[in-house]
Image 1 (spheres, one colour):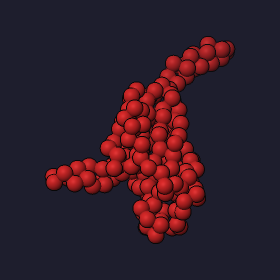
Image 2 (cartoon, rainbow, N blue to C red):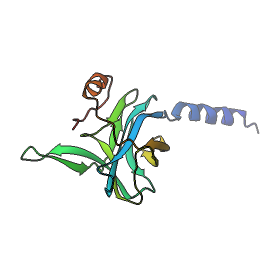
Image 3 (cartoon, rainbow, N blue to C red):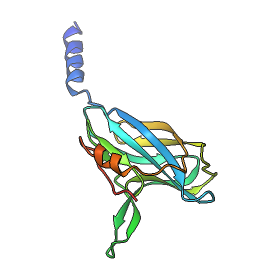
Image 4 (tube, rainbow, N blue to C red):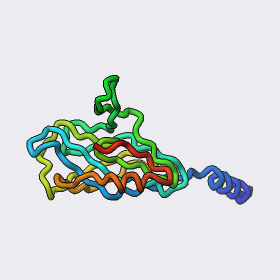
Length: 165
């Protein structure tokens, strides 16, 4: 009995249904605490998907906080901006970007287990639906100011933009 036809059929089937993967690149990341003695902190970054498949940031974790959630800002009935958890995560379209920025979508670290001092760094594991876990080393920058012009300029080619605040 010859196995060549079966083997070549199996290989052809594998190649025809092989998944298209998202390829995630994180850049321009920084973290901050609300005050030097804060019990919460946040991380911001540009997430780019250079792959051919849509993906989604679904979770994050760090040993620098008891709990980590994906958050956004939403205006309440009085127009006051409030942070809310985004349980479904943040979409990162194929060939596109998703900006995590102050006043918009961000990684919220609650119950800090250590200080986030200017110049330090925090290791965060980002979990994507398709790409899996990505470990990033994020510098703590308590002096960085949002760049409103850059955020507007960068809102092209599939990037979701939140409001800066």
